Image 1 (cartoon, rainbow, N blue to C red):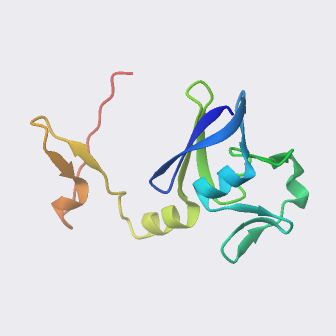
Image 2 (image 1 turned 30 degrees about the vertical axis):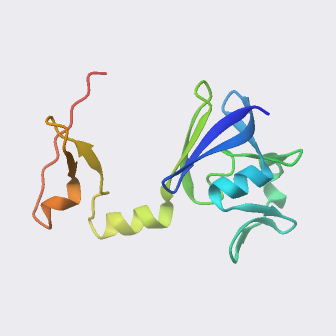
Length: 136
């Protein structure tokens, strides 16, 4: 077994995977455990929702699911780091769209200089100006 990591819905799951450049082929059972999307005869399913795969035969190969290739089909943005062997899914497109329409920033928690955590939503509903900087 060759391990990779899937980051999805605030969970981190180690999976059996084959990494080939930007393709991360994950065992179907591991993909279901990490994302909730199970491979069934009717397609890729989560609960009552199924995405047919007939027109997307390239996302399934020998019982493995291309974790990056399936992202658009399940409405997720995805980032793949083949060196670190990590696949990270973003929030569902509908969730992001609703937040943008409501003009809501995503909540996050960062460590302050003194080491105490600071959560963005703790500011309340006041108007905010967020300034960021990065050395790269």
